[in-house]
Amino acid sequence: MASRSAPAGPVRTCVGCRGRDQRSALLRVVLDPAAAQPRIVVDVRACLPGRGAWIHPEAECLELAERRRAIPRALRADGPVDLTELREHLGR
Picture: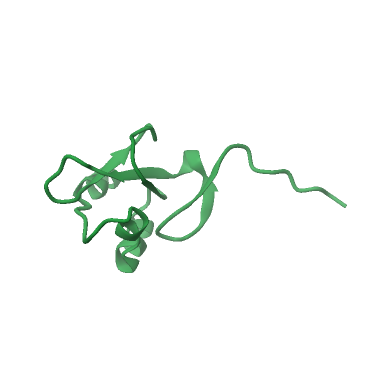
């Protein structure tokens, strides 16, 4: 009987596809507390304060997250959030 080894490092769930993956394979986003209208900030180093949401850096996962309204729900935002910075980051 072969034993399954545990994944190396922390595992997070993508808010778009709901797939579990290594933290290093996902992108963390947080709400910008200083913005007048809630907007997303891409946390490349995964060290910004506040509640974060994790997403695969793929357009398909962003589309699924938008359709399900998963990012504002994961961040516990009080309404829609501006995803412009996240779209621009994925476009690069």
